Length: 210
View 1: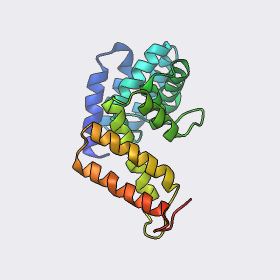
View 2: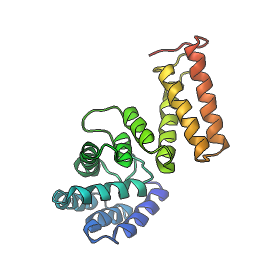
View 3: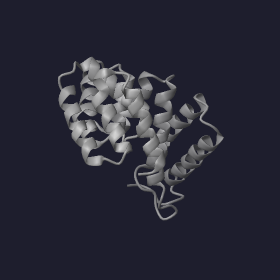
């Protein structure tokens, strides 16, 4: 595991210890940081069993905290698959159902995957629409658009993968977010470059389409 992941696990373990009910998760992070993977997942299993009895408000509060702590990165050792499957995604889904206006719950479903099968892009759009002035949501959305368009355009000039018209719309929205939240010239330039390529595919100047 890269040193930065070990440091992040240690830091998250210390932060989680502040909340007594999160101690099992704190212990999981601490054990993972020490390289004790099997022991860590055993502790995590016990934590998840306990968390099943929490109220929705408690589960949602934990889910939002963990995702903020992990930088809304799904592929982080701080957010292992059992945690997503058994606690984070179900809590976010129930919250989004009960409180459709909760933008952060929509964001969590976009990042973690929606148990209902809704597409991440739809959840991202909902989150941004509900909280257009939320810098955290805007930054995560921009990162997602860059990830999607990196895949869609990685075989250029041979061909454009996916739907360039949809990508163009997402890139325009991401550019607006990047400008609004001051994400920097390199990010803005990259988004503009990706948008130009998507528009070129739409115009037929490069092979495009799914």
